[in-house]
Length: 254
Image 1: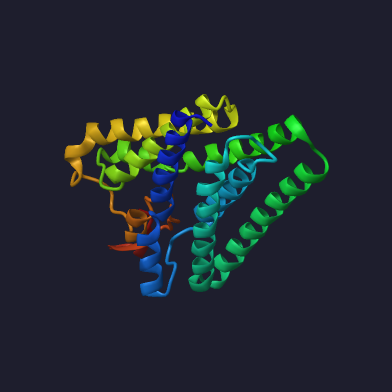
Image 2: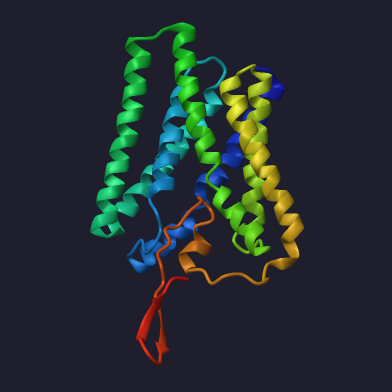
């Protein structure tokens, strides 16, 4: 591993740690209120799966010169497990069952990849299999803010897209993209190239609409505002009552 390769790996680790710690605001709210409210546990489970697969791919017997990939993703997996456990502790019964089911899926997929790569594959075939699976879930993770970008364009406001979060998505994706290029590893370069591109788009949107933080927008729930750091909050129809001379009360979706 040459110096430039190592430097970009360290930069990727640092910016990646920032992204993994970003949901602390959300979980502080959950713990304080002793409720997950309308937050979704899906992003944390999917990020956990991505971290586990990427950490496995970075191990020396799977791919060479990618130990820094294992370091940050192993750390991220530990952080995401804590998030999932907190979510399970405070989630209502229905959401708890759904989250447990998704967590079981994560464990099953990771276990299958580990088993197949250890006992059925060797050398380049092992690297290709593990790298391909890890790359797919990395792209899915980077794609999670697309709904927020759509909201920014629709509302012409960056209130729900913090600048520093967008900046670190860009830095993290770009750092690992260059790391992958220098290491001639497409399974690191390609998904992080996608992340770099999406981070670039977020920054462009921010500078286009940066003066509209308080601009007109549709009413949103507090959970939508605070779920930006990892993508999505569940939304439900809000019922409003209106008096009608002929029909009495009507429900209206907002």
